[in-house]
Length: 148
Image (tube, rainbow, N blue to C red; front, side, top):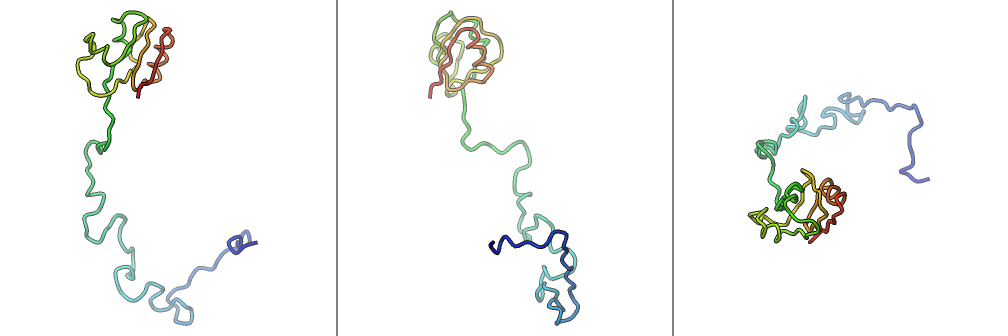
């Protein structure tokens, strides 16, 4: 048994502290609130969020839209429906899609989204796949390879 294992008996109740009943009671006069100041006054000390007159946090943070992601990843996105123009058994990369003209700008690594259908088997090499895109490509007999 340790000191931190000691607990009061089940169902027992502690007496309430009777403050302001004289110095012999241990909580006389100032009732444990100290001498003077904001926290010794009656009523509530300060409201939640009050920072002593400094502009509080809830007024400092921007309220509109969202906080920007600091190191946001940007992808060149494409849906699997765009693969319909490609030949079967071909290898799909960001460079091959730009050469064909399906993608016109390189906005970062390639990410494949799952909107639409794919009918032919393709080997797709991209940085990221959504779950539905991966399922549709593999259901058509293709392969998904994650490229760093």
